[in-house]
Length: 336
Image 1 (cartoon, rainbow, N blue to C red):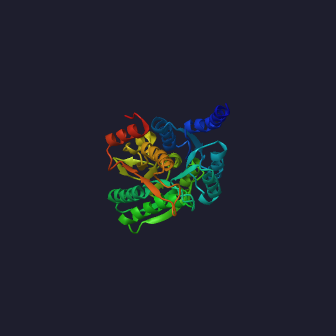
Image 2: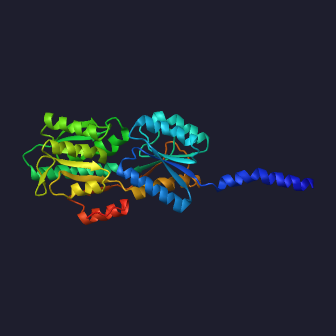
Image 3: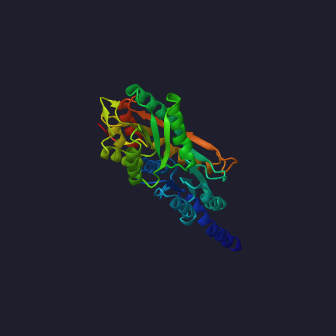
């Protein structure tokens, strides 16, 4: 009788633990701005893929394009009972205490886009630098061919104080331009971190103060909305017979909206970095589950980086049909 009672007590004590093991893994999926089409598609794919392959649940943590919000969201990883997180944050040092606290609670922590200080957690990144360099070089080449007598004057709109944006977008773009036009003038990276309205005002001011500007790198698709609106308002933003007249614009986060402009012979938006939400989302989820399975270390010093392909979408080098197929595969978008 005593042995039977002890067995029953043991089963009762073990039952909650067994149930906990059967619970699906809860993953916090950070995005810098959920209003961005790329991040919307990335989150949707992550949610679907994690459920189908791992039986895991994915929850969006929207940074709202604000560094403080992204940092505050890290505390919610623990508060909301997440088992893992893939972070997309802008202030690595501010994020560090929250990451370390989560690691102490045995939560799997990874980063996307930016390494998180010296926490040692793995980082998933896109190969943005290669694409930015290629776009800068192509823009310079095309401008020189169409306007041989007009010197190149370039500018970038984005996040001048963000290390990874600078290393993946701003700096390699400038190098790409200079590789073709060594004497090109650079007006620098303008702070458009407040979004499309800020980008619009910056461009309106630029074309007034520097009407000679002719190569513009708008470093996110939401910023490009403001950039193109400003150029249109200023009577610019046009091509003639598929050739640049006033400027060439490049963007990031190629989507179906940009597709229409890039392959419109009359628009000056002619290139964009294609960040594939499908492969990126799956990679971020796989990295978490590989850590959970013991295939990848939770932390190392320095932290390991895992790179994913980015695409150069160009009016001159990627055919319209190929771009259409890419959008269908990555976003499920049907475009004419």
